[in-house]
Length: 215
Image: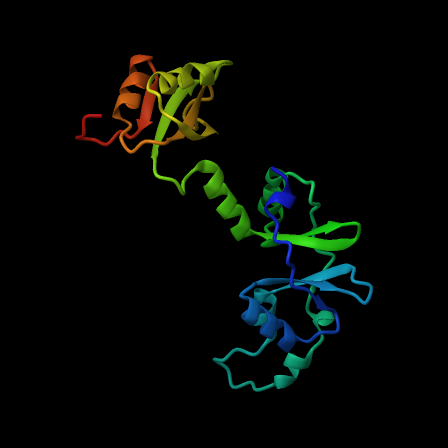
């Protein structure tokens, strides 16, 4: 999946000469937490977050009443040279940037123009959609040998049970490098027959596996 498929295209921006107060007002009005900052030629030169603003303005818990900070130009407090992405970048690669660089948003630039933006929330919502967690269904976790073709063997059980698979995630097994953990979300609220079929084929079902309940 490409960034252009999930990015927000209606990007709210400000100039380096805009003030802290203008940034606060924009964030409140649009209910956003990140604003790309442009120079006179509309080139991205920085970014402002709600955290930057909170650190800049006086705390309501102090007696400090210096209101001059609200007229400070954003050029003085913005984060310069922010990390950017491109519309044709893969979502997975961008998610890795969020993880490695510990950033909260990623301005999307094409031909030196800000054409979009994605945030941690955008990635979270897309993850929910891709895993099918927003649809009625059940989750099954299975430990399988780490060998070629094993996913095909597991999928035959779902085919025989005529059950639609919403998503499949593969995780390393922390207990054994020779096995993997498959997390499978299926479109059924009653996975008992599937679980029995998996066990019949010799697969270890880790979840559902509630003590005292015969699954």
